[in-house]
Image (cartoon, rainbow, N blue to C red; front, side, top):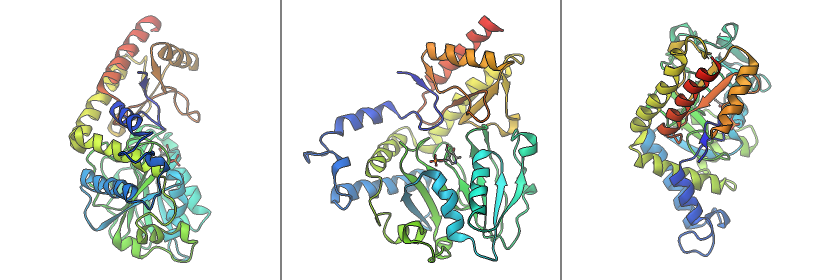
Length: 359
Ligand code: PLP
């Protein structure tokens, strides 16, 4: 198979794809696929329940959190979060560490008042603010941060103390990839298409206390309360995406859960950073070392021409998805859960050989 380093939609485990293929035409002897079944049927309901239970189990999520399965991608959360929680006298506080956090902030500003409480934009997003430097207004509606900056390649390892102010995490590109202490967060959300499954479903984990404060003045389909009250079955859920996510979560459990996945992800990232750091400047890491992401490894080379050559040759050698985001250029290897260690070893070998040819 292609060594798939795409940033999202991203690689899925081969076992999951094989199982989905097996079950696509005929699901549990029903004469139809799960994708064709009513979302009110007991068969789908079981998939829906199991998916939530697996998320809870793998993330060790306390019962004080609700699990919501929503549509619209993580970008919909950029809007839903302020719509549900901003009030005329409470602003949203945003930690700006990359382009997705900026998008979340800009979206909040179309809804109400949002303030930036920290930003590393002047540093070209090459570092992250220290948790103690994130000063949260005590009357803020919430503080929003992006735990892993997918485009830039940085990742938080410690989070600010926000007191009574709810901390909200966009964990789209690292939920389920490492053992994050979730208890500081009142809400976390993640589009599925990195570590959880295919695009089409967004996981929202929301503390009951925060849910109680959510707006009832906005259209029903936009309220977190609607999804919570109806077990995310208010309208037709993304049935196929949820089914696929369940297969991915079952796979994650078979791998040994989050701790085992984290260990493997650490090793995978280490193989690639090792080449960058040992290249004598041929490959230049974009992010300052303490803030480097395990999921999205970004680097630059001496010229754009050389970078383009790297991408072209990588494709000839069976790699896909290594070009950096169109907004920033450079190179990026996204090594989510389903990317095998062997793919990262192959990439490390390819990088060394490329340097030998062109260095
Ligand atoms: N937030 C982060 C951290 C992301 O990486 C992405 C997509 O890559 C998004 C938000 C937007 O997600 P979606 O495309 O599901 O709207």
